[in-house]
Length: 68
Image (cartoon, rainbow, N blue to C red):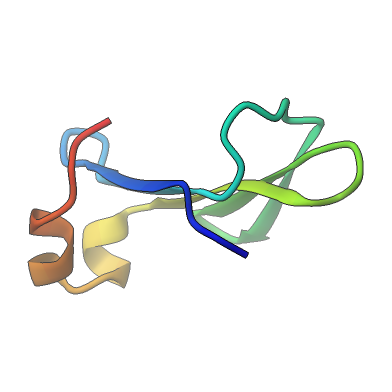
């Protein structure tokens, strides 16, 4: 599965990883608290969102990512 883009919003402390640009979200699943996965109608992942990202991902990795 290829990654279309990865962004980090420091104001929201949210990391987003998009796997399929342009597909509509049909359902959002909470993987664990603070981690959500958007799926299309076929159950394929579209976007993975990680909230409170600075607690879950090394800050050095987040600092180099573009803002949305």
